[in-house]
Image 1 (spheres, rainbow over the protein chains, first blue to last red):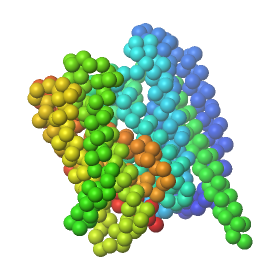
Image 2: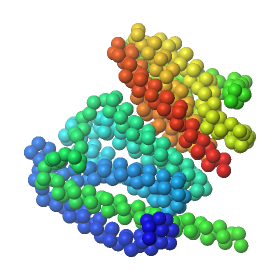
Image 3: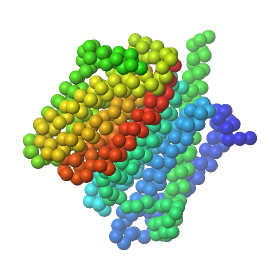
Image 4: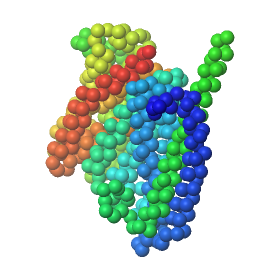
Length: 242
Length: 218
């Protein structure tokens, strides 16, 4: 028994069919609990007022936007090294989810920034590098759409994902150099004693867990769809031949 | 390698339309800028380094789809892929030829266009220096984009979408160096970073370009 047996589409599908109900329910529970607790059960911040509560959408979506790209990178490397189709399809399935997460992070940030910073948008390093990440996502999705042959598309997008990752990191530091920041420091990090205040901390963790589960559920579901599309195409091709 | 370089250069010079077109584009973009932002000299001299960098970048981008597409259609790339010369080297040479026909003229023309945009006194040397250091990176990164989209019909727009985000670090450091030079600040740091990026992509990018080109030639 190893992890690699799930590279077999049949095993992968049967596993994901067993996992998906758990993930959907878990995501719904965590999101509902985290968001309701966050929106109604926590006090207003003494300076930011009720706008602080957008943190429950903004931070988890920003986190998932970056981690979705990271997941695509890992899946792309697995495809390039071990040629498992499920891996390439999982990367393909994750990309639109990542696009949406990036959009949520950008839009909620703008909505929060308008009353707090007095502007919808500033050319701050964090904001700018997120916008660049969004462009990378768009290019990746567009390349998948443009190529007919699935294996060629998988190969090309995998290399693009690798190269794009390097340049995304480069851009992140280049942008840092280019302009001073307006955005506050990281809301959560593992090596700090104190992050956000405790009242906000626990519902935030729940919301993050909800976003992670939602991401996993969406990616598994969409990967299953991609596998079935591939199968349907193979069946049709066989019928045409006979 | 020399033969390939000479062939590409000869084609670019004689086939018409390739050589000089990027330069003309660069000129027209620069001329259009004062029309769009107004003729105030102070404003123009502030934005001149950025505009010249952006113009050079777009001129590079527009000439990219000629880089591999024609050779892909007539089968030259298939021959290159089976030749004893590694595909990585062939693509490096093609990037070099692209730089000589597109990047180098842009570098040489930039000071003249700087006069049109009222660039500050010390800015010329730094502008030329930053462009000379940065445009090779644009050609090499562009070769990757061209190799990625060579099999796609009407891939030009898609290539822009893929290549432009990759140009971000080069543009930031290049334009920053030119801007600092023009305003009398010390441009050494961005210039060094720019040189680092150029050296890095020249060393590593051909491997990625050759990998995707092999997939497209399969």
